[in-house]
Amino acid sequence: MRRTNPERPFQTRAEAATYAAARALDAANMALWESAIRQAVGARSMSLAVDVGCGTGHFLVAIREATRARVIGLDASIPMLLEARTAVGDAFPLVCANGSRLPIGSGLADFLFYSMVVHHLESVTEALLEGGRCLRKDGLICIRTSTVDRLECFAYLQYFPSAMERDRVKMPSVADLVRILDTGMFRVVRHDVVLQTAEDSVADYVQFVRSRSLSDLIAIADEEFANGCASLASDVEEGRNLDLREPMDFIVARRV
Ligand SMILES: C[S@@+](CC[C@H](N)C(=O)[O-])C[C@H]1O[C@@H](n2cnc3c(N)ncnc32)[C@H](O)[C@@H]1O
Image 1 (tube, rainbow, N blue to C red):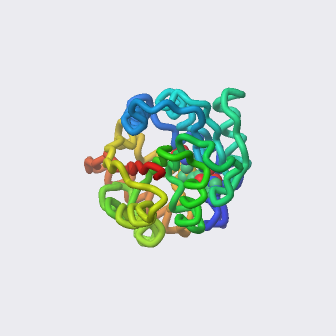
Image 2: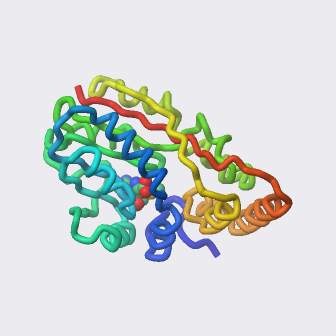
């Protein structure tokens, strides 16, 4: 039996708890992202930053450190927000909201962060227009995402062909995102590919894949998931070395 509605993952307490534990970034990876955000922010002075689709809150502290702003976490899933509350306590306001209707006054935000969210949105264009409404002039929007441009680099996907197919359809391309952003409301100011490391060892990577915390693995049939995990584990036992580096796209645009 499927664990969830594949079109709406992260809606149960169990999935949220799994996500919080399995998708947390270690200190080295988090330092990479804090540095990427810090570079995007530069010398700007910021008052309000919003993590849109904050999930279990993995990036809230890094955003606060890099922007030196008050940070609000927004997410459409109550179970994800409950995990975030457990993780960060009362340090950040956490609000249940949809990315296409942000509870932020027009022009009040200095910084919007979208991490691994755009492929879940019904309309990226609509959500980014809504983000643009909330941003003050010269405010920044940062998108951290995997893209179709680099799917082949993600080691696990070769074991789950349906997940690969699904990602080819659902994941944005860099060109798509730049096209949507560069329509007058924003100007793209940088695009970096940040190489994070999925896990320290292939054994840990097998455990990570087995946690089924990735939405593309939640979406596929249980049988394909089980078979893919078995092939991956068997390859690793036979000594196959996997490249555990994951190239993530980071796009920064300025509100004009
Ligand atoms: C893969 S998780 C990413 C969580 C977090 N940003 C991170 O990088 O760890 C995707 C999150 O987006 C949220 N989400 C999906 N659609 C959304 C929407 N329309 N509005 C707000 N949040 C949404 C989900 O509930 C989930 O918490």
